[in-house]
Image (cartoon, rainbow, N blue to C red; front, side, top):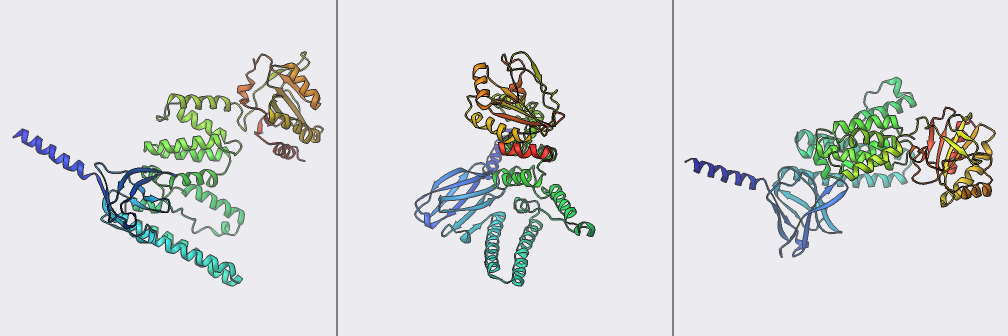
Length: 465
């Protein structure tokens, strides 16, 4: 009897496991007898799940013993013939399309997927209306333009209402989460004293968006990894919502990373995303965020996805970045002058602005950059509070002297570290040249990684010229 019970339980378990699989019937008459793909979004990429050959009537079935990750999926025949659909927990249904047009997609057997198709149809209608209003707006009188602009604004309100209505109708579903993830609330009931002051209103709206940007986007929901929504959401937050200064970005980014902790896949993606964005950012000073993320997560062992090679690369970048961040006091250097008799301290230069310039004569960029700094920046500002502490980065004194003579750089504080004892190449990240840092009178780093024109502009501003 006990053996029978065990066997029965095993049989029930087998049926349950099988019932948890997916079975997606497709009917695509225009692709009869052809290969058709089932694919899913992986943030901005599209990855293939399965391939089938349709029969002569265009029918076929994608099937598997385990459920697919929920997300946004695609039926793909070729580059001109494909369409998207939402896949939720119900993964046994039929999807048909007479000609691969969004207008002709039909789903039977999965309510959330069916509703998503209705949403696509609604969205298509809204887009057609918008294009029509925008076209009329271009040819309209000023009074008519106001009317058409109000109509365009109403389309946005209607879209938001649609999202909210469906979220109420299907509470707690993937459909509701997906639709509402697109919604970013706007401030209402703004105090009159703020509304009537442009600068206060701008700050109020900025702070509101920063605070509420993720109100309807669940940063712990791993299903968003299987959609194209997540990466653009993070990009906009990083580049537009947060004020583009390290202190502001640091608070916003680290807070978001911490909020994602409860979902390992999301924690991994978001942390990795911001690490890469911060080290590759063109915004001066954001390399400090890279150091923050690296020290908080990668060098503490919390980045469980990073192998030893990745950790070492991160560690190396931290070593080269952590001593020369914007806002820090530049590390002191005491280097030998070109005459071999005197040593010159960086910190003891008494001037309003110091350019710390590191170069090598054989570097093709240096051959243009260094003389341009002398001619376009140093000459105009040398009598107004500017000094240049120029470090030759190699160990060929003859080459160095010839370069100085050729470009007549005699007015600079020309120094070198023949035996490389000072560690300046690490302290100032001299993995490539030229390197230039703008230091204030207290030797605080106020700018770096600039073009000649940018150096000139920054120095002029700092000198009040």
